[in-house]
Image 1 (cartoon, one colour):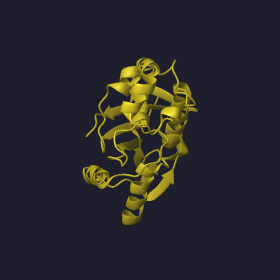
Image 2 (tube, helix red, strand yellow):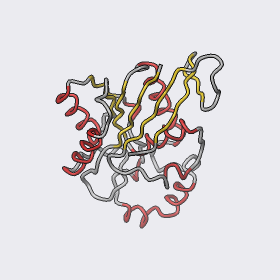
Image 3 (cartoon, rainbow, N blue to C red):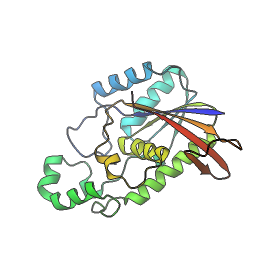
Length: 212
């Protein structure tokens, strides 16, 4: 049984060059176009849409739900990282005010947390739980997951079996409207153990197709 998951990063947002975590900004008009173009490249319409509740994801997901009549679910676990006191500030302001801590965070976000922000381990645990729910609830279906850059990068690292690699978050390019396809298969006895992971009592193995 194969589940096709298309991880769609939201498009360009209003607000300029800021650190976007929980700050709830809408898409720009160009951002809607970017996401629409990404949807047009999918081989088939999804069976279900699963979205982060933040505006830059849910507003497009809801529009697609209305236009095509596709089932829509909202997962809080797919929200972007909460950057605490850094959230919503321009990068110029951040480097002027928090440069030492910010540089340490980019190097090792597991041991440096933004002031009043979400620890990386808690973020990854939250996304892992959402991913497990997706695999269990929608197995055998085509799922469009509308989410954020940090969320998608963590899912990619999980599928690839990469742990605590700061470059996944800071150096892996994932543009606005990028789509990552993950094929997930239920593992049968005797199959290759490569890239197998356990969800409750069921084993899955995954194949990742690089962003479009």
